[in-house]
Length: 225
Image 1 (cartoon, helix red, strand yellow):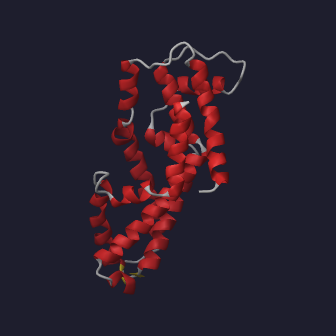
Image 2 (cartoon, one colour):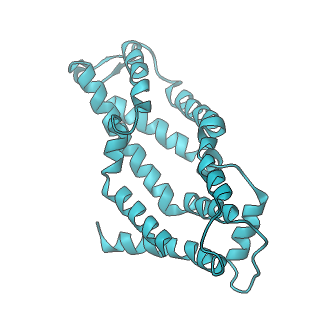
Image 3 (tube, one colour):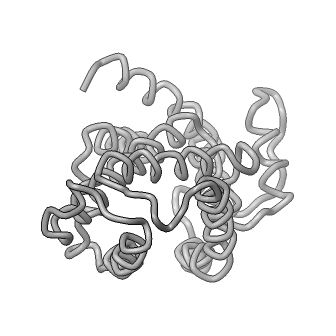
């Protein structure tokens, strides 16, 4: 891990939490109701954001695959290149804050809080601890550093996917196979993406990426201050 990367991430996250220290001078505790609301907000992806996420991925895959024929031969190299093209297409779709749209609901009060927190002499609006936590979360999801971590994680997941496909094909994918035979194999890989974290190879690989570990280490370190 380079000190340059550490300084870059740490420097960008520190201003995020200066707002927290100002807002919590009189009360360092979040009440139980706000805490429960914040924890419940993680369900937004499963209940609402996932459908938009799936739709965008489907659109990207359709765009990339529209020139392919079922008789076209795919080996590990072609499969990797194709999945990466779908990934790059997906990442370029939508707005620059699409991850926020997938992961948390929009709230006009949060934008007011973000605007106020960016001006030293501006009085913060009357917001709850829950609002503060949501705005801090939004700021992290909007950061360039988070986008970089998502990009690194996706690329690592693609590498794992191609490796798994190669193993499950018994080596036949190394020699190449028609797309018509490859598609069902890719579909069969779907459930493994949803395995619980302790059994999910994709999650385990992402957890062990140095940049990911550094990002969350610095994030939690800033939160503790």
